[in-house]
Image 1 (cartoon, rainbow, N blue to C red):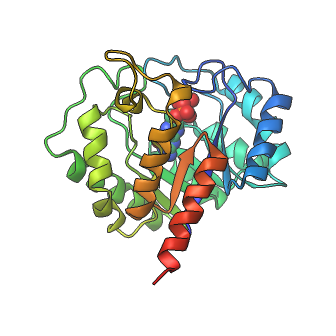
Image 2: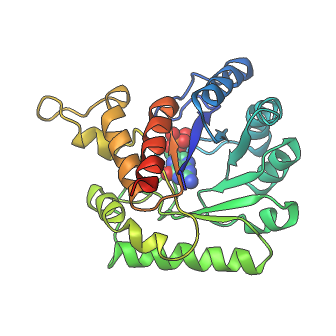
Length: 262
Ligand code: HH2
């Protein structure tokens, strides 16, 4: 089956890639509708940045940012809410979101009580400190066990649509991220649909060819973002979370077509 594309829409002043661009609801809605035109299957609306070192925001402020955008977008496309706060997730589902994208992997009770789908993502530590010194004995095995255990738990609690996500960049070094991509098939074999988000992340800035010693800017990470998204889809990911929707939809279509070819 053709993998799905989830477009990122951050209604925040400080997200690492699109921070400040869509803080205004009108502009956020415009970008959301543009993503629909570009072929996004899901638009993921977030009101709190999770970039390394990001400051938390209050529940009221997060709701103020995301709810009007979710309400306006929901008639046009499937909407997910990117939050770690139960009250925000609940309000977002009330406003029309049908998927809770949860980087804390703890909100399954909200999904169970509202009937929404749920994404369980792995993160080591919290956004403030997660990149300080992440360590694992067996990064692939530990993350696989963690997300699959949470996913089974959610299923037992009555959540009918459960996704798992290795959490690229969330308490992971470059080597950890690459190992997770290399061995993604092991997570896919766990039996839950897999979501992967590599889009424009900083480890790609270090891989993209630029003058020695320089990081590629977020705008210079399209090729690496697309390559890693395509890698993930070929390894069996059922959805990729991306900023560059139009290009990623082309890649997803290509992957879908190659699967049909004999
Ligand atoms: N990455 C980010 C945020 N949410 N959710 C899932 N399921 N998987 C991810 O890899 C993921 C995520 C970070 O990216 P972004 O939203 O662009 O930036 P910020 O956290 O600064 O708002």
